[in-house]
Structures are given as C-alpha cells and as structure tokens.
Length: 105
Length: 319
Image (spheres, rainbow over the protein chains, first blue to last red):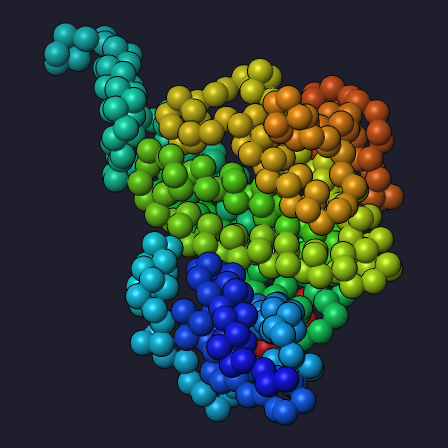
C-alpha cells in the first residue's frame, strides 16, 4: 500500500507548536516527507530555535500522529540540520498568534 | 494641620484614594506608578515581590530534576524551564524596583528568612516523571494565577510583563501534559510512578491559591483590581481543568464528578498536612491556620537552595 503524502502532512498538521498553539505545518516546521515502498516514513522537521526545549516532545508527537496514517510502517522523525527555518515560512495566522503573545514576526 | 485648600493631609490622602478607586471601578488602566496611592503601591509591591521570589525558587528546585532527566531532550527541557523562570523573576524584579524594592539586596544579601514560597518548591523533586506531573498540575496553577494578573491588573505595565511569562508558562504546562500522558501509557512501572506523583502533587495544587475567600483578611488585591479573580475562583478553575485532564488519562485523584452541578468536587480532606520527608499527606483534615503555619516552616531545601543561588559552587579557583 502506497502511503499518501498528503495524509502524512495532515497528520503532522495535527501537532501543535506548544508555545504558539498552531499546527507545525503553519509554523513552517515540516521540512520534508519521504516514504518507501514498505510504508516506512521519514519525516524531517526544521526548528525555529536550535535549543528548542520541545525537540523530543514534538518528535514523539509527530511520530505518534503519522503512525496512525493508513499503510504506514515504521516512522522516523528527525531534525533536518541542513534546512534553515525562516519566519517567512510561517502562515499569516501563525504570525498573528505569535503577535498576540508579544512576538513580532 | 490644614493644607492650602483648607483640608487635612489625611483628607487629601482619602480624596486621592477615592478618586483612584473610582477610576479603577470605571475600568481605567494606570501607566504611571506615581498615579497610584501609597496603599495600592504597597499591595503591588507585595504581589510582585512574592511572584518574583517564587520564580527564583524554581531554579534550584528544578535543578533537582535535571539529574533524573532521561535524555538530552528532557535535560534541555529542564534547563529551558530554569531559564524561563530566571526571565520571569528578572522582569518582575524590574517592576519591584519601581516600588522601592532593592532587588540586588533581596537576591544576594538580605537574610533569607524573609523568603516565602510555595512549600512544595522547597522539597526535592525525586524523578523526571514527578517533574512533568508538576509541570502539568502546578504550572497550570501558576498559569491561572498569572493569567488573572495579565487579564485584570489595573497597573498596565504588570499586564504587559506577564504576557511573556504566560506564554512560557503555557508551554511548561503543555510539556507537562504531554509527558505525563506519555509515561502513563509507557509501561506499568512508569504508570505507577505517575500515579504516585499525582497523589503527592494534587493537594499542593489545591493549596496553591491560598486561603479560602472567607478567611482572607485583606482583600485589597481585588479592591485595587490587581487581581480580578478571587482565591476560590482560581482554585475552582484549576480544579475543573486538572480533573478533566486526569480523568481523561484514567488516573486516580481525590475528586468526583457531581452530575447535578456538572463540576468536579474535592473528596480529599481540605486542608490537610503533608510530610516533606516521606512525601505523604496525613489524610486528616486540619485547620487552614495549622496548614499555613506548617508551610511557613519551609521544606528540606531551605536554606541550602537559597544559599546555593548566592554561591559559586565551583569555587573561586574557577576564575
């Protein structure tokens, strides 16, 4: 069974940034998704903060959500150290939410 | 003695007080501390000082959890908590200086006997599981406490200061919720550890908001609208929120759902005394006076935790 990339992205979108409370996809934190023929999925995340105190929590949360997608075998969630997060990757809504908390993006 | 307008100094002070209370009643916010009456300034000073000291007392307390954090991510999370709390103490310390507090002397020189904090923060954290359960329950309590100030305080600079504080406290609570649930579902051993932590910490959450409203002798925080929520109101909000979370988890906790009022109601003796050495509660009701007298004795980390904040543990040789 071929894993549906959109379904995997939607699963990542069900995980919220624990500070701003918007989906990781709206924070621009989903760097890439790859799935092989056996349904094993590799999810790469890019973090706005290199010393993020939520590294482990978010990786585990994403793993759990993606694991529920039909046809998915093993899930690997990793930090993409090659990518660089940029504030332009945030959605307008995420920027508004951040602004509400006093963070001007 | 009469002043230029023919009234006494006392009458003048009362007139200033009355005018200020009328502005507060009308929902006005104050930007300048000099607009506040001396009594209001004193209430703010007490509130800000207690808040900043409690933030400071988290530092050495959270350090006790660091050694038990199971991986690098967990250790970073503990460090981030400590760093956040330093920031919260610093911001509120700046405000305290506006009201005449010598923060440097308070932090480094004054006899530590003046320090009062929530009693659990002077009792070492025994495990990372206990740390995350505390985040879930007590950062939730702290968030209610500071959110009230951000939403309602009539002194606008304090509101703004607490925006950052609450942003980060919200993260601490969510971090605690996530890992509490994770360890609850991880294995029988970790589930038992989570339950033990809940048994120990839950009553401290109940006590977090101070005396019941009917025993409060000085309700000035509400009069001057430093706060908008009373102790009982905040305790109730915390109780409903915490119980809903624990119930979803499937954990045991000392409250039951009352179908008629559709709210969680405490079933534990309230208040009761704790034993800081054995990490247990007496299970027998005592008076609020007894409880607060007991808590003022402090925990096993006193005075070492505060002395540690003033010392360089590596010694002068490091420099």
